[in-house]
Length: 396
Image (cartoon, rainbow, N blue to C red; front, side, top):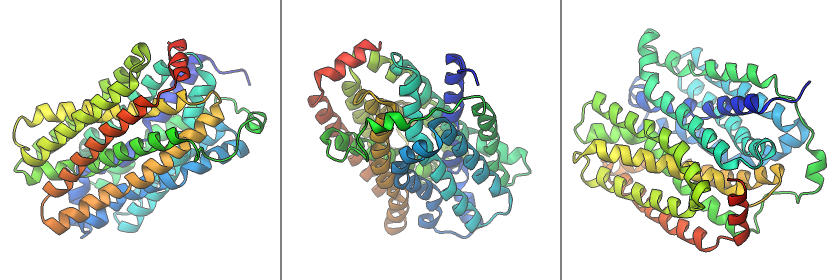
């Protein structure tokens, strides 16, 4: 098979990235309805978001091993097959076991694909990392926003059946599988022999990066699960609440593309991380204590800042090492810690809501997490190595 063109490589990367989020964010517009129809507590229904995120964390360290055995490109394609299967199985019946079981399979597939896509970028786009990560993060934001904004409409068009509305996101995954068939598989065994085994547990910066990612991941998935319910509790109609949540998700689109580009262009990724974290803290404070004061303004700012934090986090492992497989290991550690801890936030939010009778307490906790993100970003900036800046400017 002939080597794939750069254009095709970018297209398959974009399509794969789009498929990493809709299976999770599509639950938010329907979560209250599903909980009522299946007679589930808010703590239990939050498992539909928490379990895939937990799987994304726990299984991420195994991604490099799968790449060694099957090849990086073929493993990514198999993950897209699992995503399409997990979403399709939701057509079987409207039941709790099917919903939660498919969420576990979905999380497993995303867990393996995530680190390998970072390695894919390092392998094929050396010298253009910042630009390609901008497209990569934008594509994930598009997938997340589409799942949040279009699922309710899809449900209505498909007979007002929420199982069909959730399963419709299997279609882009099937399309992704077909495209990845045209990407030749490469052997990484020789490269692996030159790299240390395991994850970079002894690297202090790996811990800082992973801690930052854990906080922003926890915020994202808690917000993706409970924002509609928070606004509805504050007195907004269900339509208004969904619209505000849609604004948050849609504002992630320009942020996901713009901030990685700015970070590479001006070598200021840690300053941008601090600004995004501080902005998220301010917006969450308003949602906690004054949700009816200029809600559209804070929704716009939160969507931009939260997506920016995620997009910039994806860049960080790419500047810590030069090998595609080693980048996958750094990313795997980041995702392992980030998603394992982040998966607890939707459950904790639901538990705190059940315990306190209000969403104010859990959203105040989220505000504190965003403030801690600001501090960690400052530590990352102080520990920047001169080689990192040189590498980044060299790829501009």
